[in-house]
Amino acid sequence: MTVAVQCEGVAKTFGASVEAVSPIDLHLVAGQTTALVGPSGCGKSTLLRMIAGLEVPSAGTVLIGGAPPSQTLRDADLAVAFQDPSLLPWRSVRRNIELALDLARRPKRAEEIEQLIRLVGLEGFADARPAELSGGMRQRAAIARALSTQPALLLLDEPFGAVDELTRQQLAQDLPALWEARGTTTLLVTHSVSEAVMLSDRVIVLSPRPARIVADVTIDLPRPRRPEMARDPDFGQFTEHVFAALSKGVADTLPKAAQ
Image (cartoon, rainbow, N blue to C red; front, side):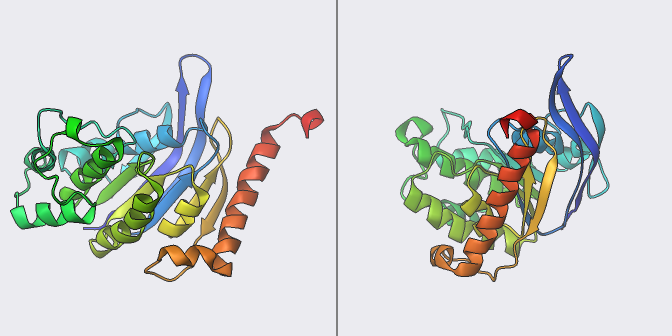
């Protein structure tokens, strides 16, 4: 199943005066991968959490396949992987993945679980508990757990932040093929412009807080995308375009005397 996501006038204010997200209209195309980039603290994760149903918008509506996020969560068609892996410490890698399947009321197929564990580079660690893993390995386990339920909507909040550069490149090469083959609609929050361009069909550039959309960049590059593509001139043009939009978004929020 593929789902589209529609955000209409979605905004978030914390307390009486901390405006995190300005009213935003955003449509995520079913089956596509979209990246959110913007300055640190601009509201990227807040927007993702509203789409996930983990934050209630102060204004506006979020619909996933025409239904509210709460319905998508109940149907176990939405999965989130955060920068903090939040694994249960008393369960092994395999058992953490099985728990996600139990909660989603999905069958536990040993071969598929082992395939996921291999895909994220944890072969040989299926029976290890989180305390026996490095931070990057725990993050990879959390990504495998999110993918295990084959969600219609996958939300990734800085999912590769704790892994080393080589592993990051390998995951960026291997994982998109998995969610693309399943028609998963994917939203990725990242601080890395090159990662956004490498992984996504589209990059949404946000301004400093309160977040507003300053650019919507279609990434028209062939797939599969391998690490060597980063040296391609077309790849460089897309990253420069996104960087320019980021810079403009920051400049537009500065007082004129500071520009």
